[in-house]
Image 1: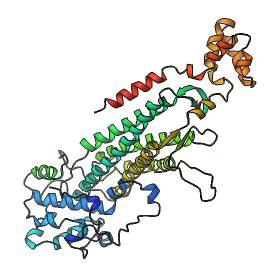
Image 2: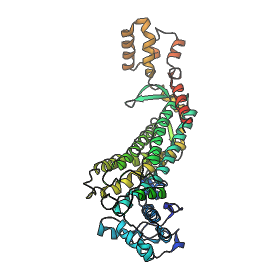
Image 3: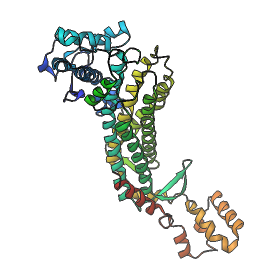
Image 4: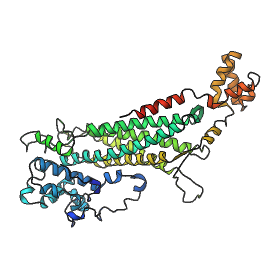
Length: 456
């Protein structure tokens, strides 16, 4: 079975044994500084950073080695030695250059850490890709759970906004121009539906799209008597067992890119809306925890939405790299497999960071309903041109009505003035009230909220 403690709390990933012993599990190593990278606060935000870091990768590889040894009947000391804090990340990374992957030096160090009797069970019958691919599935499973939690939190925040502003009028904008009245509740309901869909796809991938990898050097399990070793390994790690090794069938990796890339697309849309609504000239929403400027004291920047967009924007390139690396030759690839490691980690991290920022953004979003109402009036009634034309058509004819309204708007005349000869003041007041021309927006919002509440 996998060790019970979280990989994100373990020691760093690397080659060679460190000087730490079993009692040093909380110690960070010089090869993995606690402060993180210069851009990590923005582009590797939230819990996904640790879940996809070197330490997490190393512990995942060790968990695979421990489960494989246990499936082969190894003594307990192998699993006991499979603790990330006992190994040096920098040393493993440097030694990986000799063989082309970090598993080789890790196996050497792990064998040296146990008795000769136990050492013969370490990595027995496996190849480096078996360990690293299965570790990737473990890392992905942990990361997907964290990403799913933040996407779901963002969806819950969107649901609260939708319910609170079910009837709050706001201008719908098409091609960045005011089009018709809608409600901010329906806007948030659109965010909600998209986020719920993203969460469903992420959950499906986590729950049924991952699998162990074990095939040996050429995918034949030559060192084993039966494929049952795959089932035992899968049981030990809590992952599905595939029918065949997938060393050069990378559809499983490709399948993982889809829900991650799609989630980033959804996040980018929602965050982009927030940025647009928060513009000074619009001012219809504001982040509750805005950021400042190095030179402009008055700025209140929507930093969470901006950061979510920045993280999400990395996804298309990472997805493209992973899809472009699918052409693995024969039974083992010459470089294409290696090309996956960084973008695989990067895509998990970018998606997790984007989701973390969006959840923070929506949880603290402030809505200015008065500003929304004020912005509905800046066109002098042009926002209701569709409604006015329909009401005017029985009086003057459809073509004439269309032309009259069009010419009034083009000439900058308020519609109330241009149509004073055709409608009473009371009729005009009703026709030009945005809040009375919302269509089915409130009902649509209710449908989205009901669907959200009924999700399993």
